[in-house]
Image 1 (tube, rainbow over the protein chains, first blue to last red):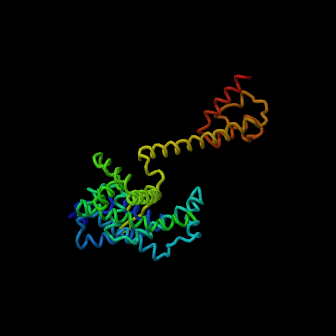
Image 2: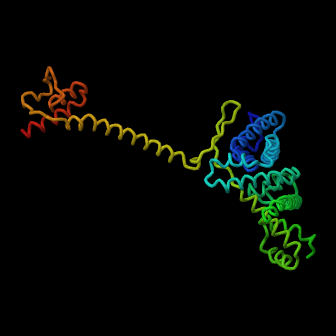
Image 3: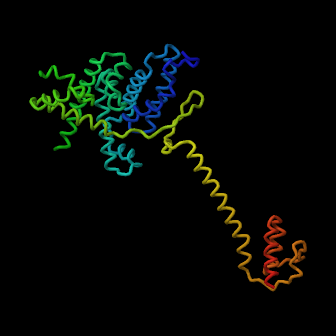
Length: 171
Length: 166
């Protein structure tokens, strides 16, 4: 362990962009994502003061996703109201597409919320971080077939929850 | 192949990790099984929707004590050297423009004013008319010399030009 209490894998600094990215994808708002990063940073320091995580990136991903989902619930961001979406889209070039994108983001965040911790971690690592199953298995200390099973179940769950959205659009 | 045995291949296909060896087996099962084909297509649609969400812009981070300060930067991807060079060039351009503007105001404008007849004897850099007039070239040059001694060389040159024309 280093003098600052960081694990051998490195300090928080090297994961800041990842933490921000995970939070942003669920929240879609820069300042909300910053709030999550600050929160996770404080929790990281507290955790490292007790015992540094052996798998820091996996730990950070799990905590970040949980905090982002909590923040969404707390700020009543589900479902995103038209006013909220328009406010977010105010700086976008194409407001109509931005509103739709933000509503989709809300639907995806809701669906991710329904997953288990393991399914959520594997899905985000695969889809947004571009990791292979083998890399995810090493990072989360799981078996390869277990990772694939979690991934398959997560994708099925997402599909089932998003299909309702597409059904509404088709009507 | 039974659908239950197909699970791992489905996960590989959805994760874009299907090997060249497994691909023909996977595609053959899809052709013959409507349920698995439907599952694959709808799952891919859901994944495409997730991947379609835009990611964040680059952020730069600095620490202030126990606080993290993150800033979005549209130029974060530019190399530091390039940014410094651009900033220096902008600064230099500003100085050049300011100098040119000041030069123009202090030299061109007086020359546009009506110029009286200039006497060679009075156009001496060191000799200063007691009552310099702003309404002739001599007066303007003297005033310039008095106000800004550093420009007396310019005044000297202009005086010489005026003298030569005489």
